[in-house]
Length: 486
Figure (cartoon, rainbow, N blue to C red):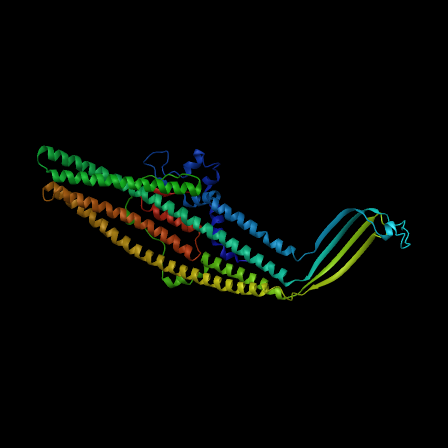
């Protein structure tokens, strides 16, 4: 059987289910307004109240209960577990009972006689016979290497099925997290674009008024209108991304959470509590990657099946005990038998089946070993890629933070310059567009950082409930009016 440490995601599922999300425990059905209110980002008190992010661990608990693919995998596991008692039953006594009824009209020397041979009819042997027969038989395998090794195959198959369930749970956690982060980022991007639209709309009106008064030019008006239309187009795209992400969350969890669109607060306040560290430290943990563990367990299944094939060279020894009783109109056919026998079956020639089966098993062991190596290489590559992305993401966020500060100063200077007649409206529009683009890039980079962090923990098999909480805290830190759902 697999060690407990291998079931990281199963432990994750149970730990999340037992956390202190008391509101989730009070929900009856997804259609209940009280149930949906837990996943709302706006409270009933008004816009001045802090917004509450939907609970990512709570949504994962929903997904564990709702996802049909996960339900299928659970049922597959339960079905596979029945392989163990089925394999063990082949080592236990097999008791069978049989019976029958026979009517027979027999013509022979004893039932009708033969005058030419001078053989008279035997009066004790009737021509028509009615008889009943029943037998109880017990067979106990005394030595069967194939059956003993079949138990090892069943144990290995159950362990592999348990790991397959853990892999599906991990994939589900990553899918829910990705849809959650995508929805949150789309909502934040939408808020930024709406704020940009309001600012650009004001500048369009100012440019239009200046043009009407003859102190402005048509180029500034067209440029302002073009920037405004572009912001509207980007907002529509962000809204579509938000709707798609929410639809994905509904498919996975059965509920439709709400993410309020709002402009992020001071992005410089975003903090990263995780020290990524050196890549070698993460690479040493790739042996606990769930896909690597699953491939290793599937190799054990192949080895166990190969050992079953090799057992075809060995004899089998069985003990047979039976009792039979025959009741017949013919007294010579009546019988009551008690039998006990020991049978030895020695395979001598099976047409080359055993040799081919052994060769097949050996090839499958080699193939499974190649799968283990491949999964380990993939895990190593995933760790390197995610560590590289996280380290690069932190540096990029630091650079974007400085760029946002510079863009804010440049925007202020451009607006003052326009008021003093030192700059034109196009300079202000360029500064404002750069300022909002950099904020959007910052938000997207934080989202990518969050997903890279979850994928890194999944790559080393250490994804836990606090990782989901940490992602919520990281996202909430981007907004001064957001708090984590509890």
